[in-house]
Length: 159
Length: 321
Ligand SMILES: Cc1cc2nc3c(=O)[nH]c(=O)nc-3n(C[C@H](O)[C@H](O)[C@H](O)COP(=O)(O)OP(=O)(O)OC[C@H]3O[C@@H](n4cnc5c(N)ncnc54)[C@H](O)[C@@H]3O)c2cc1C
Ligand code: SF4
Image (cartoon, rainbow over the protein chains, first blue to last red):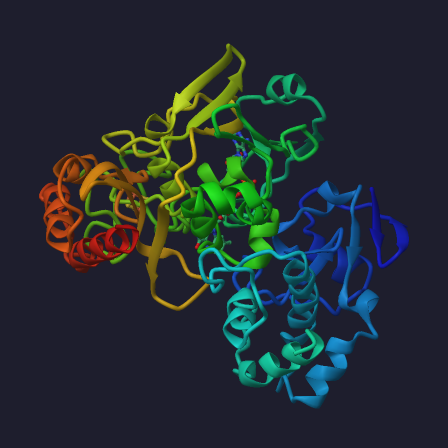
């Protein structure tokens, strides 16, 4: 099968059971995306699929032969990375690549005017702290560095 | 995970024709791939339906909407017509899962996602939904988030979807195509109660493909409210979808559906009957919820859902009155 990752087309000989996460980590040795829960519950495996954030652990690699995959390696260098450093948006760093890929996807969604559960009914979304927290709720951080991630993301959002 | 063949389909007829007795359709995969990893789902073939032309949201004459089965939950929630004319649907979608999951999850897959009952998701446990006759450990075990209405001695599972609760309140219809042709299913007839066949979730036959969901005329005065164990990214422990229209101080039209209380999205028809023609007051809303809850049979640890649903229903309707 073929898989386009970070602008490079790869040819892989893999079992159809291989998730996109395992294809990236075990076959292409792109270890930025992390395996946390492997069930879509933690967000550590977040990558961009045609620019949209997804949990790569619940995607079968074989189903994505027409897609363009972007991992943290392809996103780097990114202003979110600098902002996370500046604001101390992590401790152990395990969830960070997923947090940054997710935040990048989230900022695009907000720029398109997509609402969230924190958007007051009938209003257009603005990236308040409450909005950032709600939109980033698919990424867990066991160190609890959320308080510093919010200002890091807000800074890149231009707030 | 059991091995399987992967077959991408580009035409609807091809997808339906390719579905053998042990095959499954693959949409966003966010439930199916998870259940395959757990060994709960063991298809021998995956027919990938993501390339089928089912990705559009079309406006229908009369103000309705036709939603393709492949439309992603995030796209549907953000659709300007959905936000304006069916706010309950947009709100329900945004209350579900996470940004990443909504980007993959589809309309069809969301409807057919399976229960989150912990015994069902664990193949080392007996469960009548895995195999009828093996027993239901939830009845005496962990059932805090399971059913209070319409359950049976064989299964007390709940349907976990938020979107489906909104669709129940919107009187949606579901378009299906299959080996024996096309048909339309009223939303209330899509999911079923467990009875003595809890391994069957819906009235669809194996091999039937959902192609889309139709919404009738707009329900602008509508809302969704969800209670859960954390502020975001958790399944409902109870939810309310409601549509309300009043004229001259009386309720003309009311539709109420509850989530996380039964094996299917629960349309609260007794509550609706109690409210028609009445004044839209909190007192009447509470009495209507009580009328619906009269049939509830809570288990040891989920009786809290009665007060939860009662108060949430009144508060959501008050907000719309
Ligand atoms: C961590 C986590 C949290 C979640 N939280 C929530 C939540 O709070 N609220 C909520 O509502 N949901 C929640 N979900 C569930 C999520 O919404 C569903 O997994 C998703 O909607 C399923 O859609 P899918 O397209 O990925 O379906 P798939 O996983 O691809 O398919 C699900 C089932 O539907 C069948 N199917 C799919 N499409 C069709 C079709 N067109 N015709 C016939 N059969 C079809 C498949 O064969 C399969 O059996 C959560 C999921 C996870 C993993
Ligand atoms: S409630 Fe249903 S799904 Fe859960 S253990 Fe009992 S039979 Fe299985």
